Length: 282
Ligand SMILES: NC(=O)c1ccc[n+]([C@@H]2O[C@H](COP(=O)([O-])OP(=O)(O)OC[C@H]3O[C@@H](n4cnc5c(N)ncnc54)[C@H](OP(=O)(O)O)[C@@H]3O)[C@@H](O)[C@H]2O)c1
Image 1 (cartoon, protein in one colour):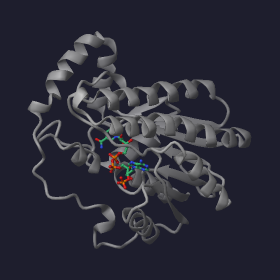
Image 2 (spheres, protein in one colour):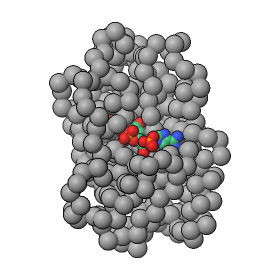
Image 3 (cartoon, protein in one colour):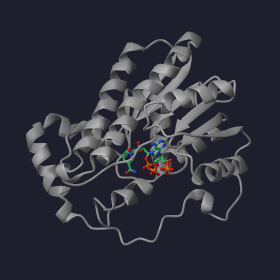
């Protein structure tokens, strides 16, 4: 079940963090990979890093998936390359944090386009082919925030709730078709995402690693689970928030993530795996 030889995996947001680790997870298991992300210098560097480490074909496609036409452009480029996509991972994302009325409206719009519209459209573009072939894998990346309202991250958490609801519905709809569907729900993970948010939610606490998130994803796929929350403690919290009154959970969370309580991480810029001088295969 963990053998993806002869398959092609398309992973969005794979120029860093969880997406890059997922691309490596599929490459390690024998899949050729197509990594898609914003067209900048990180993407070819990430592709070169994967090629050095795994004897599979690695292609890269630069695309802005927050644009209305982004998913169609990506699908057209995949078709131009003559590829059949057996595995789709909708992972690209970013988050915004602050008092809602002070957040940039355009950024909120891009966040919704990337996390909701693009995920739905990419799914619609690639799922029918998987169903026709009676085989495929779809992973949509949600969050622990998919399970609750998060004040000061209202748009992000609502978008991630969309992903969990949408993907769980598809999981039930397409059971028995040979297509495996999973919502992967990471908690706070040590990636650029956290740095770009500009704060540490649990100062001093241990962040999950992208590799742990990948292990959770493959475990979830093997179990045929509708969703997989990374980390036992986070899974427990996610389920607890589901049974407690939503208003109560929102009020408690509001105190925890209030901008005035946030500490800025005093960390040097993160080193991405492909910036590591070590070039050997895993
Ligand atoms: N890290 C966490 O604590 C955490 C927790 C829960 C869920 N998640 C989710 O995990 C996923 C991956 O995040 P990460 O933590 O790995 O963060 P990351 O390292 O910042 O990776 C995000 C990836 O998405 C790409 N991306 C951003 N905007 C894009 C756009 N408009 N079009 C195409 N690609 C775009 C980024 O490319 P550039 O770098 O070039 O912008 C990057 O490759 C996201 O969906 C995030 O919401 C993360």
